[in-house]
Image (cartoon, rainbow, N blue to C red; front, side, top):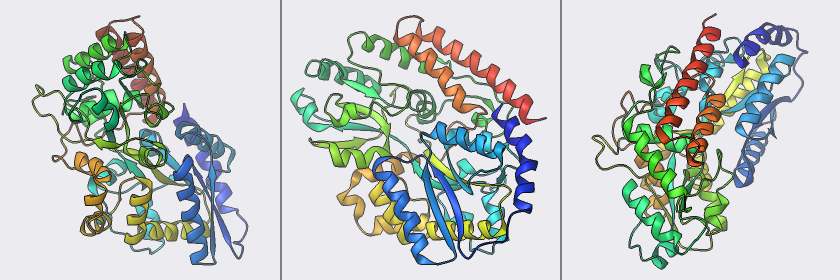
Length: 438
């Protein structure tokens, strides 16, 4: 439905752009984003630094709520003809944005038209591949990329008599039991339940979420993650949930404070959790790669990215597009990317920034920040680990979460829940496919 709304509004928005007033001395560019806490401060600083670096353009950042809230706000604004120039969209909204022809302006086209220096090969392929066409044309500009890691309370492990952080799922299950003895409400937990337990789990074990390279090769993809390995994972979590050795923390990242408070000693969530952990954890901590089942043939494979990219909206004036292109060039600066990586915990988006960070010895003093990069580059990506691109993914994550929650609550078996998640998801994919190909 969102796609249809986008398409219907395209003509209106283009007309608005064509009849816009002549540019003022300073061209304002609205930037809608979903960053909170320390990362909101980073967004504001970037805008202020760019605005201070020149006098022709002014980036105006505006927080619009969660990732889903920001996407929905952008869709509604586009329908009304007042969409922002730049909109931050999380990675699972990529298919919806790609299908919204006329509502967006591909970044590769923007940079070429505005004469800005732009080489897609200078960006990390594990990141840009997610936001590019099959021909390698970048549709959106990578901004805040992350991956999933396991955060570990080292003091709690020591108290429970655990010598080292777990590496495998069986070790996680065993350690969660031991930790539960000292933390009655939680031994192990996680955020972003479907991102971690379905999307990242599948890539890390080199098994498909769906056909057609998880949808990257076409909208006519079919989900198939109701496999024995995924079932085994959920069955174990259901069992641990009974005494709260594992304790569910919700669909998004609202439960992350359970780690920094010391309640949950093992916690899987985004590597971008780093600034909060650094600011709030009053114990010794680290982050380690996601666990894997050692009997899975190819595990561990490689992780996939999370986070978001910046989409340029259609129907804007030439002056706005010129300013946006210059802002993207400003963001791509190597020193600026190094700074962003080191203070935010998000990944550097260019090869030069990663190389410069390594050469400086930064990771020797801050090994936590290299963990997600090592996961992403652990092995060359396969058809199962390049990423995923499913239409209606925002809504589909809710459906998958509902089924996982039903299993954890004892209302369905793990296999029944996964079968239902796949069946309901495939119905949504067919609906999206019909709309996208009209």
